[in-house]
Length: 386
Image 1 (cartoon, rainbow, N blue to C red):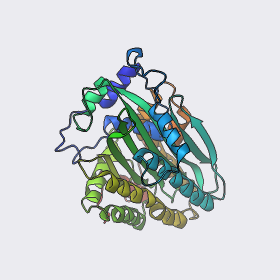
Image 2 (cartoon, one colour; image 1 turned 180 degrees about the vertical axis):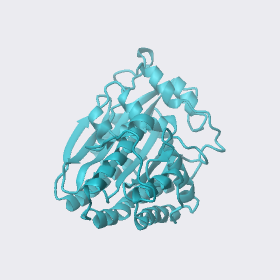
Image 3 (cartoon, rainbow, N blue to C red; image 1 turned 90 degrees about the horizontal axis):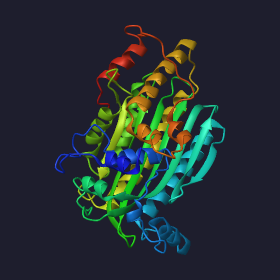
Image 4 (tube, rainbow, N blue to C red; image 1 turned 60 degrees about the vertical axis):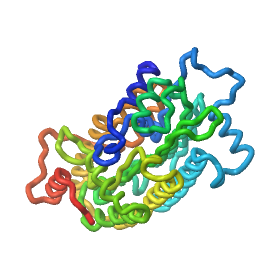
């Protein structure tokens, strides 16, 4: 796929500003970029030769590298550097907590992008508690051509549609944890930031996105209530309309439409939070609280379930449910599709979200009135857990 075609595809959207945050079930195309970014897909965005900057002009990545050499990142630093620092700190905190639970260490792979940025992919495989766990960081610098800018301008008025190109920055943390015990749920998390920059390196337009959701094989109502309540508390401390909006958005996005059921019991999901929603500092504070809520939202559940007894049949059911998880990620998730179709992408990081094992049985149906049957019925009709 050519660079121009990729960027044009990324920026196609026709949703008015007045309704764009309210009822969209799908991730905006520019966030498809970020999804790929957050699982480690280096983006091969380059300007055409006629638009290339002269060699003696520092790139945005070089300017930021210089800033970090000159002074520590602080509250006065550009938001892109603050977001990068924050997600790297949270990656370290989360990994330390997960290693305490599992008893084994994550493998850490650091990589760099030719055009600026890079990532840290951390994976724990065949652990004591986790069959597979990935906690990944990506930081990407690139350039948007005029056609992409013009299409994105419809939803982000801060973008100047008349410029020939704009530097952009994107950073995100993405995580998927697959426990061994079928009584312990899989969890997914992703928080990200996107920004375009003026020629002097100052911010021009920006927006945040993210969310977290839970995918159990066996449903424990108290776990679902705890998970949702923790997320609601994080949302309510900033805006009491956030949780109901973002829960609905999550239920609508993580949907296996070919089976008519949700991937799991949901959580929150949101996209394109920019100056139209609230100012940058308050939005960043919201993102920070949401990400920091992960450990209290999930680890108490994991501690209760990781050592529960289970049967061979229950393990087999977990494998079947994981098959549905794989189906969503490979068939419907836009980030996975974009990453795999991006030239030079880091495929191992993109697919780290997949479980180590899964299975499919032809025409399998759970026994009526069984725990397995109750889960499937609930996935067809999302529940209000609070």
